[in-house]
Each structure stands twice: as C-alpha cells, then as structure tokens.
Length: 448
Ligand SMILES: NC(=O)c1ccc[n+]([C@@H]2O[C@H](COP(=O)([O-])OP(=O)(O)OC[C@H]3O[C@@H](n4cnc5c(N)ncnc54)[C@H](O)[C@@H]3O)[C@@H](O)[C@H]2O)c1
Image 1 (cartoon, rainbow, N blue to C red):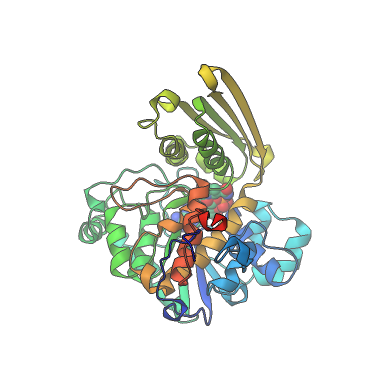
Image 2: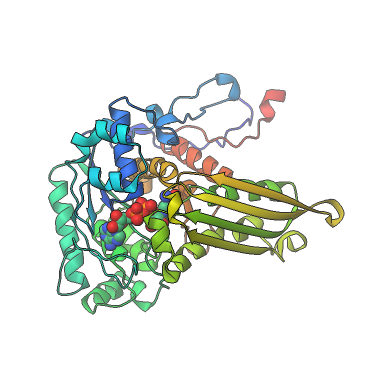
C-alpha cells in the first residue's frame, strides 16, 4: 500500500464505544420555532411522512479506504448513533403551551402536517423555565421557576434532569431558547468555584442559559448551545465539562447567511481574490426576529456572525487582500415574513491587478427548516461523544464546529470556520473513533 490518502492513524475501534442501546432523552431548552420544528420533524420521519433532509447523520455517507474501494456507508450505519425511534423529548419554556400549540404558533410547518402529528406533540409539555427578563428584554414569561437565588434555580434544573434520567437511558440537553443580551466573561466565569459563589450571590453576569449549562454539566449531561449567548464558552464551564465527562461544542446554529459566508469566503481565499467589503442584511419576522430587535440581544448575534470572516481571511497573513475589509451585518424585524427569512449579501471583491467586481447573494430561506436538522445532528453526535472514551472527557468537541457560527476551540487555538475544513474534521473524527484510516486527499498512490 502506498501513502495514498491515508493518515494511517488507527485507534481503539468500535468495541470501546458504548452502544446506543435504550432510550436517548433529549431535553430542549426553549420550545419555540426551531425546537418544535425539530421535534415535529423527528416524529414525521419516524412515521414515514417525510425525509430528514439536511441531516448529515441521517442522509450523509462517509467514504472509507481508497476511492477505488467504493465503500461509502451511511454515517448512521457506520457510527453507533441513537436511532430516531429511541429518542424521547422533553423541555422547558417560559410559556406553558404544549409542543403542538407552540408549533402551530410558530407557523413553520403546514397545518396538514401538524394535524397528523398532533396526538404525539400534545403530549410534550414544557417544564417551568428559569428566566429573567433582564437577559431577554422582549419576552415576558409566565411559566417560570421561583428560587431564593441563582444557585437554588440551578438546583431545581438539576432536579428536573435527575427526574428525567430515571425514565431514559441517556440524556443530552440543547439550548433552542431565545438569544440573551451580550455578556462578557468576568472573574465569576473563571473557575467552578467562582461560578458557584457567583450563583450564591446572584451575580449579574450569570444569565439563565448558564444555569441550564451548569445543571447539565454537573449531571454529566452533554450540552449544545444553538444560540449565540455566553453559556459554555468560558473557563469554568470547560473545567466542569472535563471534570464530569459532559461534552460541550461551541454555539449558534450555522444555518443561512453565515453558512453561505463560510462557503464563499474560503473559495475567494483559495483563489487569492481580494475582498474590500461584505454587507449582509436580513429581514425576519418570527419571535427570534422580535427578540433580536432589542439592541442588546442583537449585539450578541452580531458578534457571533462577525467572527467568521476574520478567521477565514487571516488578514495578518494576507494584508494585500483582506486587511481593509469592511464587514457589516444588519437584522431587521419585519413581521410579514414570519420564519421565512430573506438575506442579502453584497460582496465587493477584486482580482488581477486590483480590478473590482461584485457578487450578490439573495437567500430566501426558512430559518427553522435549516436549523432543525442541525439540532438533530448535534444531539446525536453529542450523545456519541459521551459514549466515546477518547472524546467524552476532552470538554470541547471541536469536530462539531461544522454546525456552529461560533465554534469553540482550546485556549490559544483559533477556531476553524471554513465549512469544508469543518466537514473533513468531522468525518475524520468519526473515522478516527471507529478505528478507520483518516483521509488526507493526497492520492499519490493511484499514480504509482
Ligand atoms: N433558526 C435559525 O436559523 C437559527 C440559527 C442560529 C441560531 N438560532 C437561535 O435559536 C434560538 C431559537 O430560535 P427560534 O426561532 O426557535 O426562537 P423562538 O423565539 O421561536 O423560540 C425561543 C423559545 O425560547 C423560549 N425561552 C426564552 N427564554 C427561555 C428560558 N430562559 N428558558 C426556557 N425557554 C426560554 C421562548 O419562550 C421561546 O418559546 C434563538 O436564540 C435563535 O437566535 C436560530
């Protein structure tokens, strides 16, 4: 065998990964548009009413060995992922609507589809949430827990998790709730001890999402964050994640505009085309759009959306091409569109001898339709990480950056935003944990 496309690294093999037997309990924080589209979608697929389009775990394949081997199993047949039939849902929300009512309110799925799923969706009723309007100005919750301080509220969430654990075999938690205001890490976020003291003292820098994350990680439960809040991306949570073998993985579902950005920007960079400006604007009319209409929540989203281009373009390495890039992002709340977001990008690029050109991208998308399969994949892969000895105690699952606008990486390591690098990293991680050769795309041996 030549060098081919094989990194050669073999690992322990499947026998060390605990099998996905029994029920996987999924606790969803926030039963709004994304969450209900995710839950209803899983049920629709289970009933054979629709296909899980957009889900890599359900529809994707993974090439093993040489290109000439013609071996490309489905990812779900290759890695021991939980079966959709074994997923059991529950969740928390600040309103007491059941999942059918919340899905009907979100108006993402059509009435005919929802009617077929109604008997099941009605059975999922939210637990009272931990909420404080200071952190999400545009919402006024009615179905919320009361406690003497933040530590007490976190303990109530821990009790919810413990009760649910008794009914299933494994648990994963995913945040699909509203975007909180922008918070910078402070001294309280440094260690588990300082964070616990902060909860006792009702520290203002501890938002509700952090209490859910603390509860999950304390219980050894993986926690994925679909929103851009400061939730698991600080030292205390990384420490807790490692200590209790509870995986974490970055934040903010990479769905529409940023997904396109992390596809186009690597192409420009690969061809050494310069970029002088990138203007991105959106109109969005769902509750998420309403929450993001508050400047403090928008700031959280803006920071998350801004990060990708700087990391991809590396202006320090390519000052002639990217050092003067002007990057602007706008989100406008526009109720008539509901969940059907429209995004426009104007990209000013320049080529040979500096001659300017323009590219326009107009993406008429459906926000929750794009986010639901990402939520599913994250839940299934986080459960896999928890069952995999070489992954469960490393804290951050950088291989899941593929799904997130703000990937998390080890301290001092810049995050990878390029969708294709992220995709290769994800698939090589699967090959690695399954004891298969990695694929490097070198391919010289075909020409021996
Ligand atoms: N759809 C996408 O493409 C996309 C992409 C990236 C990120 N997101 C993020 O995903 C999140 C969900 O989006 P959505 O469209 O479903 O919004 P949504 O407003 O429809 O749903 C959010 C739900 O969370 C609930 N909630 C708020 N605070 C809570 C708390 N502390 N505890 C429990 N429940 C709480 C709200 O009552 C609401 O039901 C948002 O933060 C959004 O920014 C969405």
